[in-house]
Length: 319
Image (cartoon, rainbow, N blue to C red; front, top):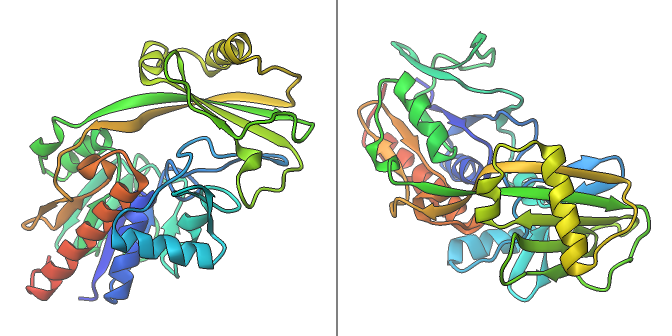
């Protein structure tokens, strides 16, 4: 049987796993509920406006991620914003696009169940099996999702993952503001020390952006985001915009304003293990919830997951 892996989740962990598996000659198909790539390394487009409304930047400490970041910079997919801090170009999703090389990506696909057949693994949505080549014959499945989303999906395959019980996340509300006039502010980023707002950034000031419009992203602090988690995006946008004006004097007529809720934004309590793998079922899981709240942690977890799969192939394990 030809080795073909299903990866549910096309964020950095899932993409890193696919990238490493590709170097070992193992084919992958990625499934993601979004139509874009990168997970929280996301870029939202609204006409001429571009917002990095998820991860704001990333740093590289370990040699493997440093090598990947160097490749992205050389390819024009990333650039240094300030010392030791990098961003994707022309948006944060740039590196995610660069991590693919021919893999099949099934976007706009909310996977709700996994089924193990005699021929291999099948991936399903609420409407039934996903119509993509190889479905029903996958030799392994990697779940590269937030931990709370992995638990019920693994359960559909009859697998419990108690190691995920202790994982904790902080949510984050992100406010996106678009202004018609460029260079209206004399700062690039503000990191408040306290209060309801944790981060303010001029996306238009990041390298690789056109600068034709002024785009500002505001991240609410974890406690405030928790308190307002189920509020409407319209109410949250209004509240954050008012605080932005009252505390920092940031005002002006906007051409776009919207809030986005990241329910699983910041890992507060990781498992401390690089990845999880059940050899009997050949189902694994990876993500930043393994090692910590950094882009590099997600990348390292994805690579670790791929190494486990590669080793299992060498050991002769099969469906």
